[in-house]
Length: 217
Image (cartoon, rainbow, N blue to C red; front, side, top):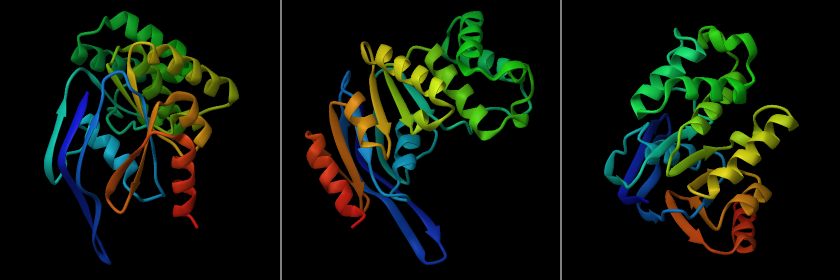
């Protein structure tokens, strides 16, 4: 479970302060997968980074119960001077996971070939995303944060992601950001729309779709 208590986040822009999260209080229950919709720039990725602890809010509290992943699709935490394998070993040590198992499962899943043994700074953005996804699947989390990662790679790799999601959903929750309604329909039980800095929860995917489409009207 993850609980937000009056979470605030804003950024300074040439036009003034842009408040993307405006005193959000919400509970993401254990073992319930939630899909989040919102227009570009609404703050969805920022919300995921705050949920996972990769970014701090300007105000409020984030309370995490259980192990929460970093945002899958966000690879900013990798050390660019280390190889993919070395990054995997570093992360596995942090989470107390079996180093060799994490390395092998990530290598097999990411499908980056010989680059797995090369510095991550030589990777394309897509390869970084593959590595981040494979690494997150190699470590057990109670909640997986997912940021449009199913858009990574070819059809075969996207199918592999779908299968991995299905397996994790049996024992973990997903908090998933996507512009694809079908992706949310497939993986989530609850839905939310982030607009004007506030998070609005909706139980029905049809109603969530109608409200999301109204944002672009």
